[in-house]
Amino acid sequence: MFQVKVKQHFDAAHYLREYKGKCENLHGHRFEVVAALEVEQLNGIGLAYDFVELKSHLRKIMAKFDHVSLNDTPPFDKITPSSENIATAIYKELQSRIPPAAARIAFIEVWESPENCVTFRPETP
Image 1 (cartoon, rainbow, N blue to C red):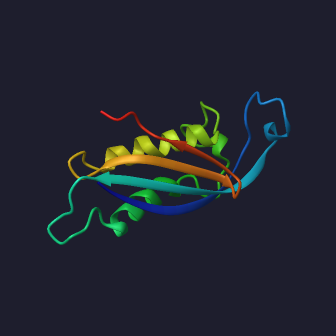
Image 2: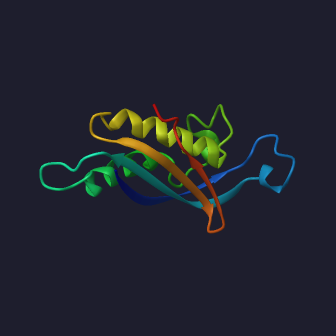
């Protein structure tokens, strides 16, 4: 089993609806996102999955989140833009871009600070 990981970031503001604490106020983060894919076999040239392709997918997904108020950006205009929900949204979009035969998404990590991170792991089949 091989695992391929890439990391990208975006800067955004958000607030947590109904949080009952200071994070209910508008504030910002540099969100670091790690996407990890798993593959059983290497391709014909010895790669698990192309870093360039994975970074491109992740960059396109996150572009709409960069330098915005997440609470005004779908799907977070309807759900709270928590790190958990951000990870889930990125997973869903990335899953639609990567054919199941090419790789499986092992996890999506969202770091909202150097000390705080959420990891979303999809259920394994």
